[in-house]
Image 1 (cartoon, rainbow, N blue to C red):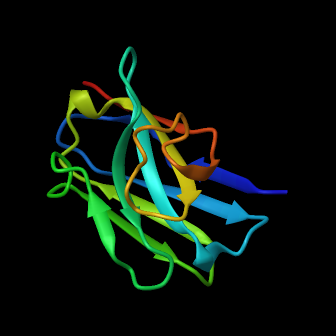
Image 2: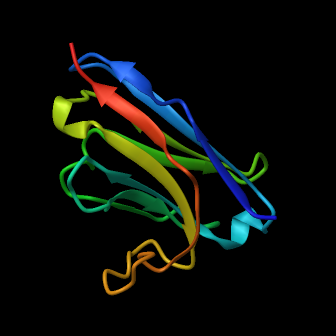
Length: 126
């Protein structure tokens, strides 16, 4: 059974930092690209960052590349997202996803991802 379980969400003040983790099980983790997506209230889900299975090549949304860092530990079947200088507009549910590519398929409801986690809420507020 495939599972992607996100953790680390919570409330943080503007300008603060937060780290998210996603623990994967039920599939060969290193064979999949891993992505973080987010969805703010009333908005479309969007790619935050993605990383390939073994080469470590990354893809970031332009608006987040200077503040967010994606990484993975294949020995621990875990992908991470480090976020800094968080702003209220970063408030969203953050989802972990596994797929074959670091580039989302915008023609697909699942953005081309094979598996999704249930998400973790990040709230940036005073």
